[in-house]
Length: 113
Length: 114
Image (cartoon, chains in turn red, blue):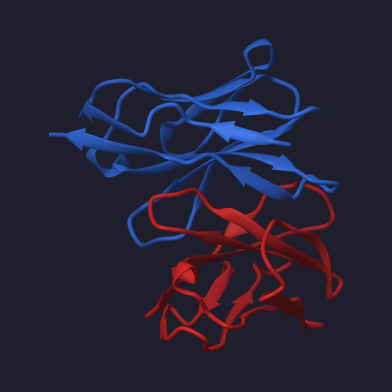
């Protein structure tokens, strides 16, 4: 049983560019959440997708957007990259059928130069 | 707003010694509480969780945690630490309308001396 997978593992971009990160949830899970983890800090909630819609959103600007596909996989898009967007981006999946436990992927390390 | 504090930024213990990592939360309703561990460059692995019931919960790798509502705490313990336990530990509270957007603490880095 595959866990949560994310791609790519690492990414280097320059300021002003756009980036897309991808996540496949754990088998049987239908809800995907994204988190940003800056160096030396705890993860911060970006948003959550369920039934292909954004269900909740944290305190992040509109430059951060996402999408969920019918197979429950998800993308995180960040436009107009800033140096401060450099972080580890974590995807977590969970099931809407009970058990509020989130399972995390290994993350995508984004570096903005 | 929900919040989680982990008072200890860095803790060093000797292998075989006992361990307690502190976590305090602020949340208006009954919280869902979690402890995750993160090795360098890795994602988060769930150690244990508390939803309701018995306030002492057992997790993987010999860890346990105790929920104390009166102290708004959910401290993580292990009776005998192994060198492989060196990592970053995060306490989290499940918040939001569906209890599924997590608020994480800043983390405690654990070093283990041989």
